[in-house]
Amino acid sequence: MMPRWTYLRPGPLVRGVVKHSFALAACLLALSAQAMFRVPSRFLFLLIPYVSAALAFLSVVMLVNHLMREVRRDDPASTMIRIAEQISGVYIRLFVLYGLVLFANAALDHTAAEPREADVVEIAGDSLDFGRLPFRWIALRSVEDPTRVERVLLSPADPPLWVGEPVLLDVRPGFFRLPWIARISLDDVRQGQAILERNPTSAEGWKMLIKGYALRNNVPDGTNATVEYARLYPADDYWPEVIALGLGMAGHCSEMYRILEPFIGRRTDYEFHVYVGHALACLKRRPEALIFLEKAKALEPNNWWADYEIGYLYFDAQQFELARPFLARVQNLRRIDSVARDLDTIEKIVTLKRARESAKR
Image 1 (spheres, one colour):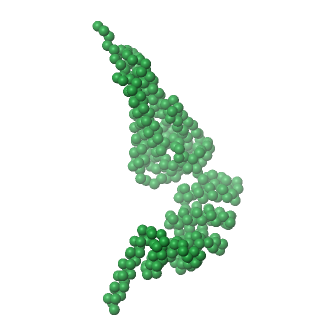
Image 2: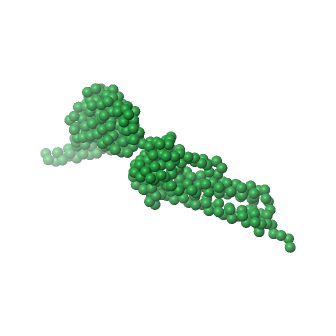
Image 3: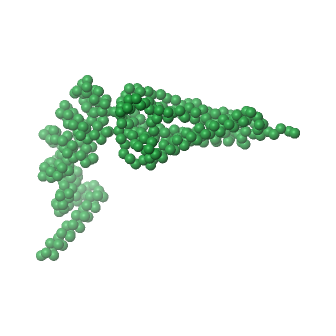
C-alpha cells in the first residue's frame, strides 16, 4: 500500500504569506492600541516576547511550507509544526484581544483625567518580529507610592524623556476599571520648583511653574505665580497677557483682572484696553469696563472688537437699544452668526416694548 502524502497547507507559499501578513497587521494594530490607550502594569510586557516569537515562527512555517512540498501527515515534523503553529496563533489572538480590550476601555471612558506625579526610573526598547516593529517603554515610580514601579509603552506623542525626570500622568479610571494613561507630559511644576530653589528669580523657572499649574488646572497657584513673575519682570508683559487671556476664556475673570491690573498704568495699546474691559465687564463692574472699552474704541475706531465688547456689555445689562448699534456695526464688519441671532432678538424685544408703550397710551 502506497504511503499517504499531503501538503502541509494547500497553496503553501500564498497561504503562508497571507496568514503572516494578517497576523503582523493585527499585532501592529494591537500594539498601536496599547501605546495609545496605555494601562500601566508591572507585568504588561511578558506577552510581547512570546508574540514576537509567534510571528517569527509563522515566518518559518511559511518558508518550510514552500521548501518542503510534500511530507507525510503522520510525520513527527508535520505534527510538531502544526502544534507550534496553533500555540503561536493562541499567543497572537491573546495579544490582539488585549489590544481590543484596552481600546474599548478607553473609547467608552468619558470621565475626566486625574493628574498623577511619577518619576522615570528606566527607559528600554525592544522589537517585535525580528526588529520589524520597534517599540520603547519606560518604568515609572509613583510619587504617591514610591514602592510601586510600573511599565508603560511610549507613543510618538510623548515628549523626549530621560531617566530621573519627573513626569505628570493624566490618568483616567477606564470603562472596565482599568486605569489608563491618556497623556504623559513633563512635570513642569516640580522642575520649576527645583530651578527656583537654586535661583529664586529664574525667569525660566517661573515660566515652567506657571505652565505646570496650567496643565494641572490649578488656577489659584497659577495666578499667584504669574503675578509674582510680573512683579519680578515688569518689562515682560507678553507672558502674563497670554496667561490672563487663557484664564479669561475659561471664565476666571477675577484672576484675569488680577494679572492685568499691574500693567494698567503702563499699557496704552488697543488690545490691552479691550482685555481689561472684558475682565471688568465679566466682573459686573460695567462703568469701569466701559471706560477702558471707550479708550480702545478711540484708539482704533474701525476695529470691531471694542464694539463687540461694548455691545454685549449693554446686552447683558438688558439695555438692548444701547447694544443694538454696536452689535450692528460688528455684524457689518464680521458677519458672526451669534451676533446676527442676538440682533434679531433685540429687534423683537424692542418692537414688543414699543407696542406695549403704544398700548398704554
